[in-house]
Image (cartoon, rainbow, N blue to C red; front, top):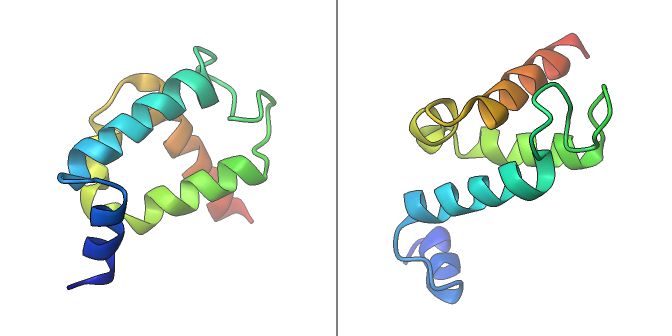
Length: 89
């Protein structure tokens, strides 16, 4: 059994894509809100929470194209802004 399978079973996850979609919806609503030009910090610059969330999403890049870049503009724009911020550093 793969490590991710053990974690998925422990968390009652039967479909990783659905779990990712649900988590992203929660991040959009509670983390980003409707402010399309801000970060999770609600400021003009990312904070550690933004960096952590970006790192998690980057680590599941196999699911990323459909589940992040195919979503609403709020999270898609946030992700692209984060990508730009990370490349600058």
